Length: 221
Image (cartoon, rainbow, N blue to C red; front, side, top):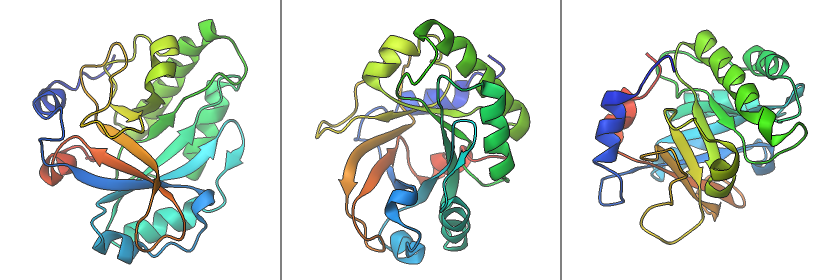
């Protein structure tokens, strides 16, 4: 692993439950439509937004460029995620993402959304995912975030616990269950049916495991 998040993780371990002041955000894709009022989203307590950029070898979310630009213009912290298809080649998936996504200082790190087996075999997933993560880190100069659910991570993502975890778990509990290999969570997607002023319909809701100052230290330098 090229970088170990020693100082960041130490702080996050001390902030492992909702007793710590947290920072709220959302994630969006074409399913929210392209007419989001990001100024209103920000005024209603959201600090950041992850925008779906790409999927697999060729797909680009049709609303990505507009969502990313408009969210940044409204003063939100922004990030871009790629939905990883396990049956597609890591290099081609990286080419798709890197062609669509330019990240600058002050943006959130790139995100790999991996939550299902869709082609290939379980035995091939770790090597393919590691290749993709390495390509992202080399290109963007920062370790990527892994998004997944506890069940899939337990079965298919062993050995990736040094990467920041964005865990999906819809529960009223005070904190999510951690997959094996992770000591803490960095982001938690705790609802897929949230309501936020400025967005028509439901949207995913997220928490960062820390306060605003901690989140700012986590951005791309």
